[in-house]
Amino acid sequence: RSSVEMTDEKSRPALGGETIDLKDYDVVFLGYPIWWDLCPRPVNTFLEKYDFAGKTVIPFATSGGSSITGSVKQFKKLYPKIEWEEGRLFNGGTANVAGWSKQIIEKL
View 1 (cartoon, rainbow, N blue to C red):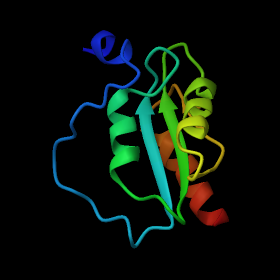
View 2 (view 1 turned 45 degrees about the vertical axis):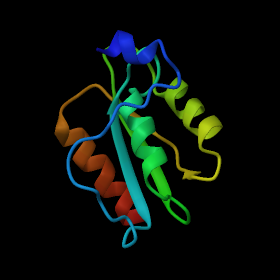
View 3 (view 1 turned 135 degrees about the vertical axis):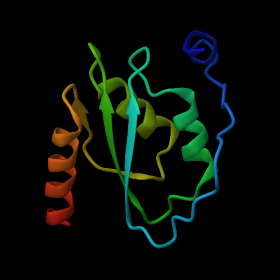
């Protein structure tokens, strides 16, 4: 599936589940795996579906070998109106993510 989606830059797979309301959030943590040095196309669908005006988005990702740099660069290019904070790559378990996000929230 990833090969089909990632070869087409305009691919925007449908999202399942309920629609979410972001109006009560000032900060959104955006987590995803790295595919081909980028975010998976469903993440683009998500970013284009919702209004992130006035919100800070903090990306974090997992990967076995790629960095987060390519995906963050792509985000800033495709979605320049979103306020992007520095992202972080995780290769460990969920405890690392929980500790990092807690530190970010405490700084806000």
